[in-house]
Image (cartoon, rainbow, N blue to C red):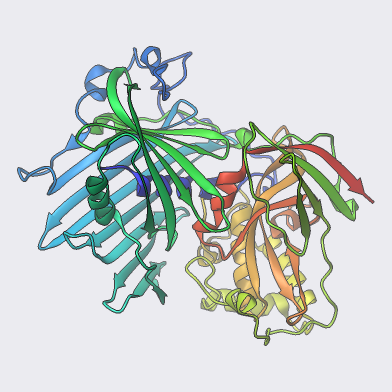
Amino acid sequence: MRVKYLVTICLVLVLAAVLVAGPGCKKEPKPVIEDLGPNISAAGTQGPSAGGSAVEAATKIPTAAVITPAKDASTKAPADQNESEYLAVFMEGKKVGYAIQTRRETGGKVTTSEEVSITMSRAGVPITVKMTETSIETPDGKPLGFETRQLLGAMEMKVAGTVEPNGLVVMTTSAMGAEQKSTLEWPSGAVMAEGLRLLERQKGMKEGVQYSVKVFSAGIMQALDAQIRIGAKQDVNLLGRVVRLTEVTTTMNMPGAGEIVSTGYVDDDLRMQKNLVPVAGMQIEMVACAKEFALGQNDVFEVINRLFLASPAPLGNPDAASAITYTLSPTDGADFNIPSTDNQQVEKLQDGKVIVTVKPVSAPVGGTFPYWGNDPTILDALKPNRFLQSDDKQIIKLAQGAVGGAKDAGEAAKRIEAFVGEYIENKDLSVGYASAAEVAASKQGDCSEHAVLTAAMCRAVGIPARIVTGVAYVDDWSGLQGFGGHAWVQAFIGRNTGKWVGLDAAFKGTGRGGYGPGHIALAVGNGEPGDFFNLATTLGKFKIDKAEVKK
């Protein structure tokens, strides 16, 4: 079966990378309308949907471009040995990109590559992000290695990993001409693309079959637990063709980051023909199609206004408050997870509502750096990684210059926050998600770029720091009022009894004060794209009913 679980993971990561944007811009962005092509899904109609409403939507689509087989055999070898499959990606009915899966069996190895490319508009600024994930396995599904290529910022990042016989994974990250070595333990029992394909063939497609599997994604460098359930056959619209396909429901879970439920439709050859997955309150669809259509022109899809949460009332300047208590209610009975931190306390009520009280903590006075405690979580927040290159020479130099003669950790962190706010000169939305080293070189980006550079600089001088993603209130941004997707930083100040203190260089550098009670955290991590999973799975599942401001 070619069920696109890994393609779905790549798609969510790509989307999550561009969801964290908005309120950190210095000026309201001037609309840049770029003609990315006509609305392929036909004027005045929705794009392809699960239950067949796409019949009308597809009537104006060129038949030859859509209903030809999705499989593209590149040689005369059997299809199972060398083949590619193409899918068009739609968001809310508009074509925004493509996905490609290629499987090649040669030399006693099976190489499977899955590529996703998405183009969308953020406040009138078009942006394209790409990710390719390749797995290398034996014909019986044993993992041998992997490679990822991510073009989320201005430059490509490549990670190549080899799975050693002892279960140790040796990885090399390459970006901007530099290499970074690291290791991890292979998750016990985890499979990649070929192992998953073989398991799917073994389990079959009989209605009612259910099973679980642990799927390793090189894009997030960890395994997700997936529960698969085979449903009944039904008529499904594929861009104008009505085909009888089997429904497959997959629930993927990442610890502490919620779940993603996708609904796929598979043909008798076990090929995925359509896949639906909700992300951040939006419906994402992948539909098998001809290569020409998949790689063809996209529609213009504006994403920013779809990510804003309405505020129950204008909050004015949230920084003037000592705390704000928010009442969040689920949409359509959805379950969602909001993390508790030193700066926000979370209480879940029996009726499904969640009470979030955001009360920023002050940096303890007298905290020293570098941190020399023994808390493993805090120590982990000191390590360099592929997005927070705190061992980069330029980042170290910038950090030392920003800190100057400061001896207090809280004061040093505040100096770094202010420095980054001024250092990034081009505050725009044209970058998807750049690493700290990229930002140090380009001086460009939105809130996520401010966050990665701030965190990396804190780590470079021995102050533990981590990336927070969530939503933040703005009174007026590009004509929008409410809570938009945002990223900021928490720095640990003190020893083992210290506090995680909020820093927001994007807000600081745009005259919005910095971190304050107008921020609601949805995910906390080390800057890896996988850390955004909870943002992608939580946005769209709740609304803000009430905001009680305490002066």
